[in-house]
Every structure is written in structure tokens, then in C-alpha cells.
Image (cartoon, rainbow, N blue to C red):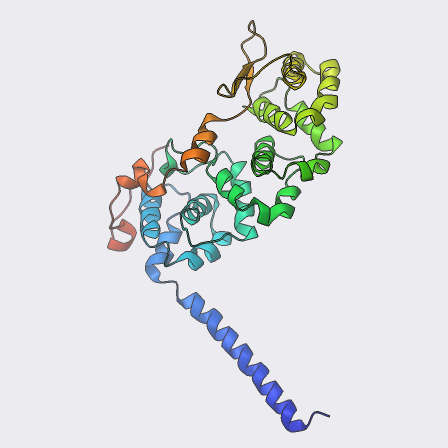
Length: 303
């Protein structure tokens, strides 16, 4: 039987533990210095010129020291702030991402908005694709949950990651008839930029399991989807051959459209690594003393 004294001790220890936990949480909250707070606030999408670039450079310079702050700040940041912080995190070698960070990267891939600081260094956040790939084995359930009817570019990115890391075969069952119909319909002529290529890439990666859906599209699709389906079926049957160094496949020499079955931009990133954020032209041309700390003012951006 537990004596009253022991109960009091147990309760006392529990209260002490709670106080310690609260103190640690409070300390973590207080640990965000005012300069870092201001920098995080200036990452947001606003009408001020170059404040985001200065804030990005300021945070980047001390990234290893504030990694926990950056991760904890992510949920409260807007799309632009999240993109900047995520990019910074990809360059911290000692950092291992958790599921929420990988999820945010997957969501960024389908967002066509991109901070001006990226300039020409990024095409739809492709730099997140190889980064996620490094941890694909750790996040199989999460990646599997993104095999769904939603965004065709995002679905292609996930399929590419799975294929590149040799885990696509174990996910094939998730490419349900509903998902495949979504992919096939994106082959058709519409006003969505690049969706036919993203769709063709998915079907190409899935391989011969795509054949029944492609044959059906030849019967029911429009001129564009039928042509692309014929190309893919020809590649699978061996009647057409794709040069491994040529990622562009014309549907028909007499028609102006075709499909890209891969991305030379993504291939370069996967082979050479992503460009460092600090090397982006915009960041290399801003001051190391940001105006939000020195009391200076930013001009309004002209739309």
C-alpha cells in the first residue's frame, strides 16, 4: 500500500515536472530575439521592396543557430515566409526534417507562387523534390497519402520521388482507377499549362500498368490525348524508342505539341545539387545590415 507520504512525494514530483516543462516552453518562447522576430515578420508577402531579401539573408547567415526557431515558426508564416524558411532548412546539413516539414514542401510544389528572391533559380520549387527524395524511405505513408486526385504536378513529383528511390512498385496499388482516370484526363487539350507533360511523365514512370488506361483513352480521348497515348504505348511496346538523353517526345511531326517525359532542370539539380540560397542574385545584392534593424525605410513595390 502506498503511504500518504509517498503520495505527497509523487504529487510533488509531478508538479515539479510540470513547472519544469512550462519553464522550458517559456524559455524557448523568450529565446527568440527581437532581431530574429523582425526578420521572420519581414519574410511575408507585402508591398515593400527588398525587405524579404534582407530578412532572408539575415536569417540564412545564422541558420545553424536558429534551426529550432525556424522550424517552430513555419506554421505561422504565410506562403512566402514558409518557402524561404523551407529553402533555408534544406541547406542545414545537421537538420533532419520531420513529417510536417516534408508535407509543407509537397504543398509548395503545387503552388506556382515563388518569392522574387528566387529569380530564375527555381522552377515550381523543384529543388524540394531531391531533398524529399533523400528521406523518402522515412516518409512512405506520407508520400502514399499524396497519390490522390488533386494536383497533377504534385502527383508527378511524388511519383518521381517514389520511382527515383525505387519504392514505386510497392505503391502501385494506390494508383487506383480513380487516380489513373485523373491522370489520363490531364493528357487532353485544355488551358492548364504543362499538365499533359506531367501526366505523361506519371504514366511513363508507372510503365506497362498504364497500358489499359492508355488504350481506353485512344478510344475515348481527344486528338491530343490520343496522340500522346499512342506515343507512350509505342514506347512500352518497343515500336518507338526514346533516346535517354532526349527528354522531349513529339506526338506527331505535323502537330505543334509534344510531351516532355522528364525535366532537364530537375536532372541538373539531382546531379549537381540545388543552387544555394545565398548565391541567388537578389541576396548577393542586398545589404548585410537590414533596414528593419537599422531604422531605415523600404520603398513601396510598384505592381
